[in-house]
Image 1: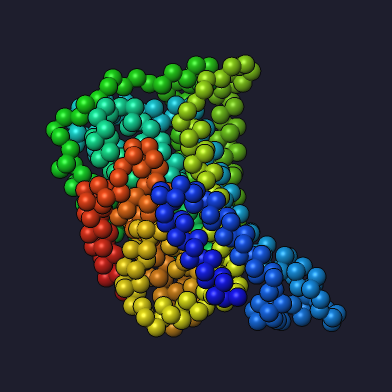
Image 2: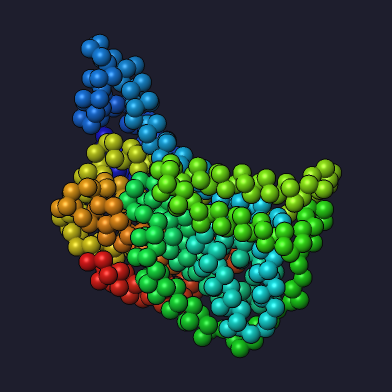
Length: 457
């Protein structure tokens, strides 16, 4: 049975890593593997339940004789739903941030970015795109930020090679910026939800390594760009009757949306409730503000066709399904004992945290960065003992794995959803990306990993 589960995991991982070549969506693969894993778990449920939850199952029976139906009911309500709840926290958080981005985008709150790109200087455009992407992705989901910035850049820059280089800078900035905070990437959200890290401590530890992994490749990309960028005249998008907000109204909405997301860590610290509840609260407030400032437009019969928000929504829905699938996979891997066996192998052959971090970085360059992190995280629990400080809350293990998995996605485009979005939009060959950007991104990521190891150990 364990051999069968491992085989399913290997095949699923290969399909996820080769999505570009198989054209099979990784979200579909993750959902299928997660579903199949739990079906296999139920088929041999009695053995797994007695091995992992013997005491809880005896309490559940209350002295009654065990039956196949009892085992399945126990798994459904006492084992399976626990992992569904954990996955739902991440998915609902992503859903809330997705709608926040769509509301802000539809009301022109990000139109200032297009105005900042009124230049033909390649260096100014490169650093404007990179800094804005880095800052936005640290506060919003990095995929939505990437797609939005790629769309804005695509409409401005004429030559394809220049768009490709600037697109690479956007992806690297989004991945590094998303890794900086607990709300900028699904990986950080998972670690935050499970109590492995706290928001302020996590950002403080990630700051220097993320800056190294971000700045070095951006400087390198800047050397490959010509002095002048060929651009077309930047015109603000026509939004028809969708919005006629003035500048101060857009600023208020941007403040409510972004400022509310900044408040979520404080909300979680005060109430101890799941962060997704804070994100939903911010969404509701922004929604109300949106209806107030657009009250004269609520009865409009015809609304403008909006391309960017639909792209954002489609991409994030895929990411939410992918996250859900990976969380289900992690659940049955832990419950079947495969994770414990893998942890023993890691302790035997990769006990050094720096070596493990480098392995995770390389794994995430070909496998998805979120799946790479969850593979490592599934091996450990948050420990409270003094002897296990590396695995305690804010321990070095969690931060090293989060950083390594995030920046590993910069080495090859196939290692992150943001990179795949770039490859689909600009049709970048994998070999070209690795030669021109990936090698430098690998070197910078490794230097940042070593710097983090020295800081934390």
